[in-house]
Length: 307
Image 1 (cartoon, rainbow, N blue to C red):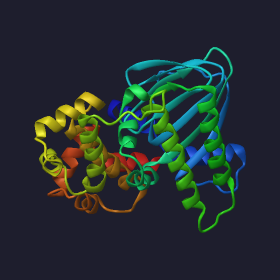
Image 2 (cartoon, rainbow, N blue to C red; image 1 turned 180 degrees about the vertical axis):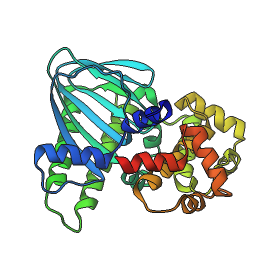
Image 3 (cartoon, helix red, strand yellow; image 1 turned 180 degrees about the horizontal axis):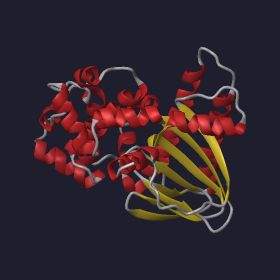
């Protein structure tokens, strides 16, 4: 195996979607009704340090119940302990997570499709919450932690329940309520007064909503700036200031994520995927994909099929 294949193989192995995690933890716990769109799991042991970064294609919400340790998310190292809430969004790599003692952590993972279906229904602050690295780890009070635990355990119970026509709807609504609780902990001050969005936060929030609705057909920053009545330069500056990514990089993120999902999980041809993502032709799509990922669509699909 040559160096290029080694690099591709390593990168693929470090990227997981929620269905992978769901199958793994449900197999370990013996659950008979695993769901591919969301998973609840608990960790109860010491964590070994690792330098291999992991990226999950979805939103992960984790709460430390006992013990303490450290986690490196993106380029920042965080200490966590009892009642620390950790949010791992699709833009972030977890480079390492370790503890010198036993820790107990409860976690919920949700795929992008489920999160995107919830986003329009709740406050635009959610977009800021999952795109703002400084909020990756937050210390909660005992009372706030208890509230979050209650929702997470209830979602876990519903995930294990027998299939029913309304199962996914119930889980979606509970997750929406959990995210509202988390938003409140982040954006409501201790005296109970909600901190209003700044103008820049409002622009970013609206931008993310527009991108989620239009990225499959529009990749131009000018398109989104026009929808928001701001200049492309100002939109990119706002995005960079708050998220660390330019407007163009945020758009590219969603396009590449969607392309990877279609390449790995569907039988669509590369030409059909190119068409669905509104590229001028397959060649242009291939160059775009390789420029941002380091390998061609066909090479990525081959690696995905091997797994």
